[in-house]
Length: 178
Image 1 (cartoon, rainbow, N blue to C red):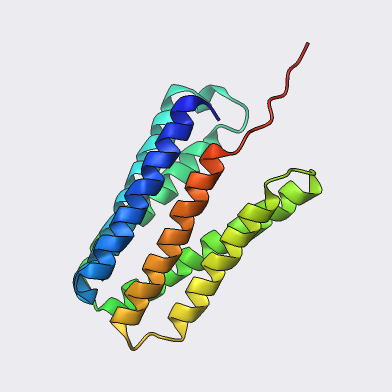
Image 2 (cartoon, rainbow, N blue to C red; image 1 turned 60 degrees about the vertical axis):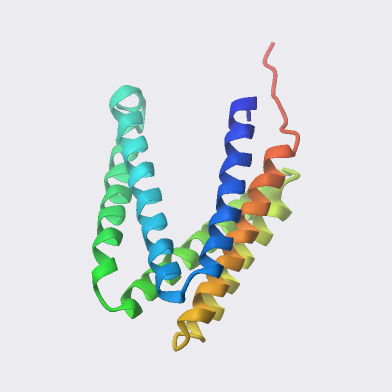
C-alpha cells in the first residue's frame, strides 16, 4: 500500500469513528437511517468505481468481464438499499444484518487464505470477520430495540475503523522481481 492509500485509509477510519459517535448521540431512528444511507452510498460509489475500472482497463484483460458483473451487482445493491429507507425498518435491519454477516464470512475466508499463504496479517482479518459475524448475530437477537441495534452497529463500525487505521500503519511486504 502506498502513502496515498495509507492516508486514505486513516482518513476513512477517522471518518468512520466520527460517524459512529454521531450515530450514538442522535435518536435511534435517525442514526439507523444514517447507517442505511452510508451503506447505500458506499455501495453506489464502489459499483461506479468498479464499472469505471472495467471500462478503462479491465475490458482488455483476461477475466475482465467479472469486474463488469461485480460492478453492476454492487451498483444494484446500492440502488436497492436507497429504496429500502421508505419501507418498514425490519426489512432494512435484516438487509444490513445480511451484509454484516456476508462481510464477516468474506473476511474469515480471506484470513484463512492468507494463513495458508503464510501471511502475517491473517489474525487481524480473522478477528474483523469474527466481530462482523458477532455483530450480526447479536443484532439478530435484539430486533425489538432500535436503540440497541444502533449501538451494536456503531460498535462494529468503531472496530472496523480501528482495524482500518491499524492496517494503514502496518508494514507491507514488497516483492521485487529481478
